[in-house]
Image (cartoon, rainbow, N blue to C red; front, side, top):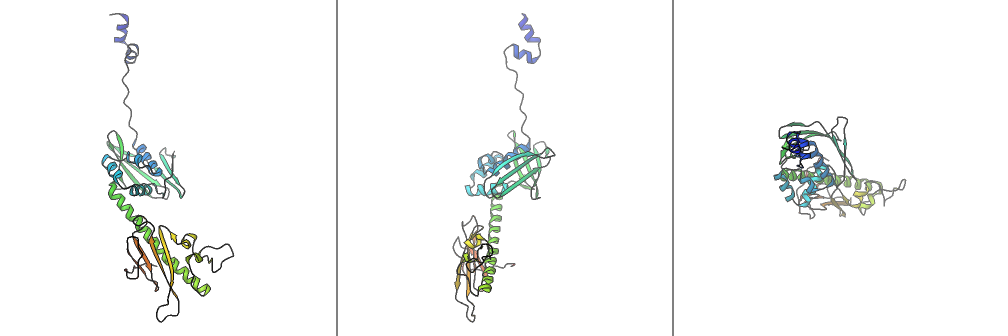
Length: 298
């Protein structure tokens, strides 16, 4: 055995591979921690990046998420990121050396502060505090060598069901806002009548006025959005109608229809001359006095 062969056989493993021209075995890379997957998922949701977000889901949920209509995918990501439009994600670290994800959009900033993960074998649970004080826990499972989102709070992440639930909640909130706006408009119109002895010709006359310049044309009784007839996903119409039989006072009616049926609302609403609100799913068409009366707290 020559010297080179002897050294190659007897030297330490690193010298063997280096001297003999063989490649040292690559060290097995450590998998990313579960918090990294959650950071990536929330950042992708903030940016509105559906494909990147799907890479952080289990195989079954990823397929279900990408199969959703684009509108539902966008709504799902917006709800998770707590923003109406895509934004910019910024990552930092808390004093406890845990990740902090901030999603900044034109409407504001949502902040997610991670707690210490509770990891055991193939499951990990990460407590997260949102800037407004809400707390939740994200569950992750190890799948195909990486961590994937499994649950939100105590509920398994069922993408189709969760998307439907969030969509229904958003529609209910939008419809409740439309009803509240009908009450606000009716109250403003009555204040206008009391101040000027007549009804306004249009909602625009209820709108903001320059300081110290309030007039019948700019009464400053509602904000600019409502005065324009469009607010929070609903379009409002107003008209003066003949006084009810036996009444000398001129009456008015207000309608409210979703600007995008199925997205900003399902039900249309109608405030009749008696001040009662009617509502029904009219598939984006106007509601009428023949539709059911809605019981409200206002």
